[in-house]
Length: 127
Image 1: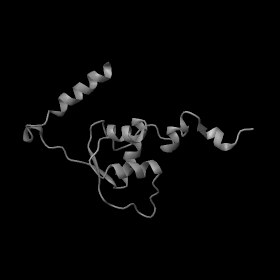
Image 2 (image 1 turned 60 degrees about the vertical axis):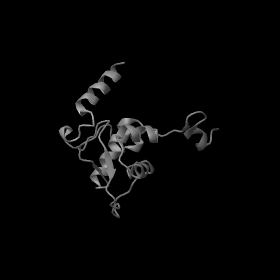
Image 3 (image 1 turned 30 degrees about the vertical axis):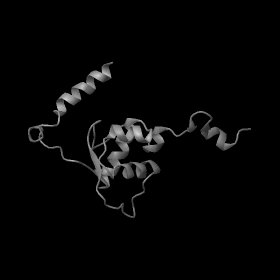
């Protein structure tokens, strides 16, 4: 007979947790949505007494102490992008992370236009 540890841990994969368990059954963001290159940063506020953060949300919040994109966060945490997107939505709703304002491309001539970057990403996805 298998022990509970054997059923929940794969020999090669490590701990097995389904993505829907991390997002409390949600498969899509409901309100605040971010794309791959949205820059997010922690607000520095502390969660209220009634706010419970999962281990994954605490890790994302820690990583957002420095400006980060959802793509970087997904890579850093080894979580699926959609899961990161939903967890970030919760953190935004709690007032713990916010989107960094993007300046007008005309104000920053040394930075490429975000439309060009999005087009490059789209073309890379097609490969």
